[in-house]
Image: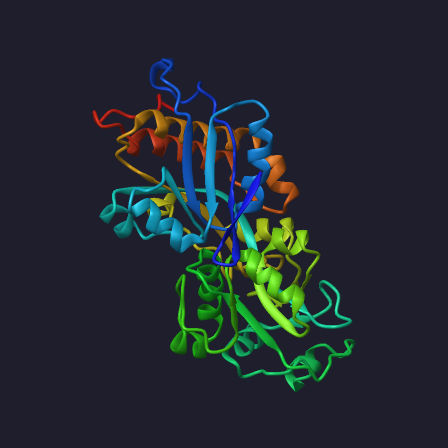
Length: 358
């Protein structure tokens, strides 16, 4: 596995093989595509990395995946410079139609606020939605602010300036995070809003989940937001959040699953689904799915079939790996729906489906 530098930050390439058999119309073999390419979201990179390592041991066809952020992934698939894009920000059905794309979810997970405050361990600090928004608006400036200390009487919080860390690139993680802040804070919704890139009122920017994690880890007094697997891998301290039911919860597979339980994928046009601020006493409030974007007309059908073959394999073989990283695998009924949609939407230049009937 190689890590490539990009603009002082890290982009990654995955080398994974794809089977030559599976999802082939009528079961007929096709000429092998030697390499397929994808680019986009950093949110799912840890699980894609695990899937890659497991699959690489059995095959030789390579997948070059660049972890460059959702905004970059969307741009590259729209420009047709990669075989698939990856985004944590779901595209509206009208956007999919405009660019002749379809999207489907791979896993669900959580975005978590992480802090570097001396003496504060994971899960010890409690924050309300309003406090989190006010920190990112620059209204709460120090860790011993009266609002924070009143909520955390057992913690010794320093008179230390808060350094806000956010994404510098177009990011689906940012889309999920700002979607949540827009729901819980009218001031945030009015001043900043919800998008993959926003005009941050305060703070410093890091590229990718990796960059944000790196800054928070180095700066005493910092707060940032990353996908949960990055917090685990970097042994970062997360904050508890007050959810829509008024309960303070930790991020973990149980709280992500609780939030995901309300998702009605069968009635989500174009698989457009937002899972932030879901009801339920155990729900983690900043939960989201991550998506793959494919052109509905595949001018290189052998490559398109290889892409679908890999994700079919991942659905069938990658759930345990995803769960160990505290992602929530897609339910079996959703996988079936996704693969039926492949058959009806993804077609070759002759207009015929790339897959057999699912």
